[in-house]
Amino acid sequence: MVDVFISYSRADEDSVRRLAQKIEAEGYAVWWDAELPPHKSYGEVIEEKVRMAKAAIVVWSPTAAASEWVRAEADMARSEKKLIQTALGDIMPPLPFNQIQFADIGDWQGEDDHSGWRKVKASLAELCGRGELADGAPAAVAANPAAPVAPPPPPAPAPTPEPTSTPTPVQPLMGPPPGSLEAHRPKPGSTPKWPIFLGVGIGALGLIGGVAVVLDLPEDDYEEIDYAPVALADPVPTEATPEPFVTPTPTPTPTQTAAPPPVQPAAPSYPRGPQTFSGSLNQGQSRNYAVGLNANTSYMISAQCDQDCTDIDMWLYDENDNLIDEDTLDDDYPILEVSPIRSAEFQMRIQMFSCSIEPCGIEITVQPQ
Image 1 (tube, rainbow, N blue to C red):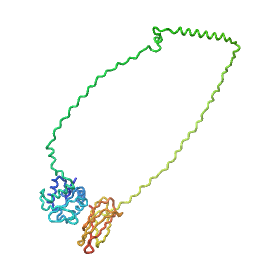
Image 2 (image 1 turned 45 degrees about the vertical axis):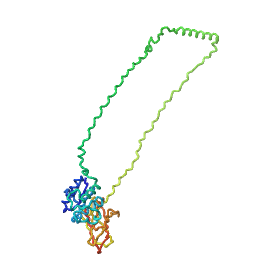
Image 3 (image 1 turned 45 degrees about the horizontal axis):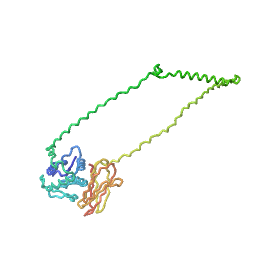
């Protein structure tokens, strides 16, 4: 993680080292190109660190103002609203950066009450928050240990459950088993029932005999009826004729032939190295330049004009005339940084806004990173 990125000229390395060490002492993580890894390109690392940092400090000096890399890094930080400007000695930041406030640290030797350092420190607190060591070391908290905490009281004993009495099982009343002689034996003191059944049977016989005497029917009155048995017809067996089994014929499934995959056109390829364009424009005149850019490649596109020009602007459009990037600052050195997601031919548009002696010469450089 990077909190602060420092852009500077190699000629000012001693002053920049003092500034970097002072910022690190405030608790911020600082990166400057003294830590550049040997396996990566300069442009790739610079762009990565500037975008990752929360603040970017530019140390302006005569040599830094003449460096295209310092100007490019400052322009990137300004576009992302993280630029903090400092100056070494009696120098103003170049156009258009002179429109932004800066802190003069030319005579600063690391003291805390220097006005330039106080401005830098306030800007860092606004962009990055206060550093980890800005409020004092957290060891002061550890020096006052917290009061010991009393151990929790022992848990209350669980109540003893009251004993419960077990009910005595009720024994069922058992009688003699069914079918035994004991089951049919009369109970003591009960009256036997066989004299009653005997009397009822004798009375019934006497009643039947009396009815037969009173009626005295002759034997001729009885008619014999011959109940001939009815013969039932034997059932006729029927034999079911089985239906013939027909094997179902499967319905043929139409065969679908997969369409061949569409042939993808080959992606266009454009030059991998730097590209340069030149020309001349009158004041108020504009011109388009076609440039081929490859996908997954970072480009820095810069334009500059001769000594008679003070203001040119630049725009970049894709193949569908969509605006990709622009630099419309009032200066003579517009810079664009793009990373296309597909290879295509783009259009660079240059317009001249201030030319004292017409025509003014221009030169455009497309530099892959």
